Length: 279
Ligand code: C2E
Ligand code: CA
Ligand code: CA
Ligand code: CA
Image 1: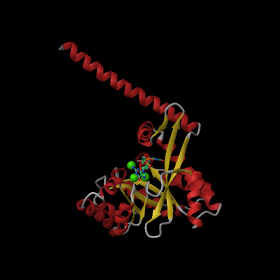
Image 2: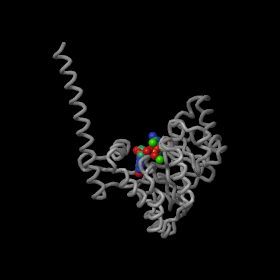
Image 3: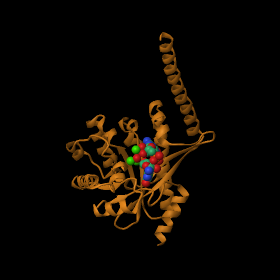
Image 4: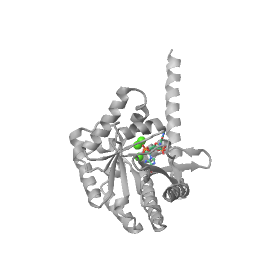
């Protein structure tokens, strides 16, 4: 039995070592990818539910590694957060949004908003507003067309600080969205204090709206709550015409999801935008 215990122990330490190694490898690979510009931004259309027009796009980071192929952000963003590389990734995506957005404006493409994900770490580091303003200035991209998405959980950290940062960003003309809404525990009193423009209803609620009446009522209540707080409401992860019809009935403002378009490389998204404006 003693020998057995020992084996179990070494089994777990081996597992831990393997996990730690994998993390280190991923971190080194990511550092290399950043340095050699192997990360790319994809664009997912955001649609107005009433006009069916593209009103914006969310930038989603993509990493295609030569050895491993596609590595999903859910896999490497947590690693980037724990080793500090998230700051550089965030700066890369922001720069990309403003540079690409400004280039499209110059080409005469329809004006759309570009939404960038901001991680908890970036958000809690005091210099976000200065950094964003500098990039806007350098690129010439209008602040009103830039939207920053902050997850509901990121807003729970240091509340006074969060409100202060948001007010600064808002004062600079930047739009703010709360991401993955419904998965955290923000109180109504707190939400009411936040200078937000958009509430993005998490995909798991949208998934369920076709299931049964209870789930449908919960989604309806979330959308109404958003409107009561004077936010615009966007539904994430819309995959079917049935979901879309229900959301329309619930007076949701915007949606995003595979039903309309998957995230696309910049050039493919530009074509989508052009095709729409020609209609
Ligand atoms: P998120 O911000 O909630 O992004 C939405 C995710 O849902 C994206 O996954 C998107 O591709 C996926 N999605 C969109 N429509 C549908 C749909 O109809 N059905 C389904 N099943 N999925 C859909 P992705 O690109 O894998 O990103 C995962 C998460 O990684 C993001 O969740 C975000 O938290 C993070 N992430 C992605 N890019 C960045 C970035 O540039 N910076 C930071 N900090 N985080 C990022
Ligand atoms: Ca997002
Ligand atoms: Ca989300
Ligand atoms: Ca998410």
